[in-house]
View 1 (spheres, rainbow, N blue to C red):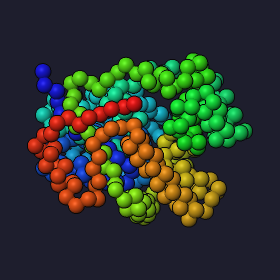
View 2 (view 1 turned 90 degrees about the horizontal axis):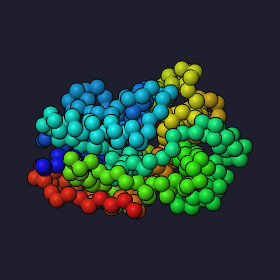
View 3 (view 1 turned 90 degrees about the vertical axis):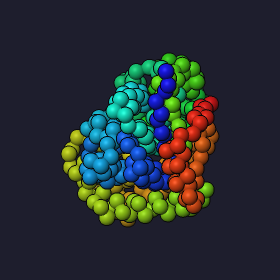
View 4 (view 1 turned 30 degrees about the vertical axis):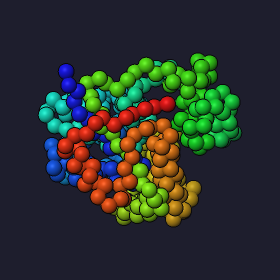
Length: 318
């Protein structure tokens, strides 16, 4: 039985992945499956570059607006939801294109999800309390002693991932990196993933695009969008949605912690740092075919290959 073709288009934030996918939809019957951990939240539209209603009417999109901003969404849920969405798109005789830069989600879809223990509420609260006293870099140092491999991959200020890695190590006595290496799942056998990563040859071009895009988001009403979330009264910076880049900096401004111009500068810097982490992951962890999106003719050549078909890209996860 032949496997269904699934195109995967990944890369750092701001590189133009969605634009490539939408232009591909001008030539092929495409449906887009989002691989973005912030676009799953309702009310996070401008700051996540979520496609507007007209775009979604023209090209069907999946895995958007799945959760209220007060909720949570895991990589395991993404893999289950994405797999079903891909099956549905294929059943309609259309071409599924997975688009996004949440590397944890992408790894899970292509390689499987490690079997990890459920969240431990009391332990998680203890970790949060210690972080409030000592700071997340101190807990990152603790993680480095317990699980050097995990700590090497996690930024000292990445609260969510430090918390989860410590939680697993303390609850099970086994480093989360060891559990992840023991992952037995594989990409669903029914799909032939044809995956490329858009990796700019010149980092400065991406940095300028990120700055311009955030400025455009502010002009489009991003501060008002965050203000509406802030006014709800049931959200805090501890919610995953509010931790999203751009949102947490503007939230801090609304809380009176920093002027707006400082918040904007920090949001742009945080977005560039996110892109740097994504590029590091792409270069070191995902042996995907890489395309410089800013090279002349790169997009046209990729489109031609999608239309004609090409051998499955090599996908490897150390």
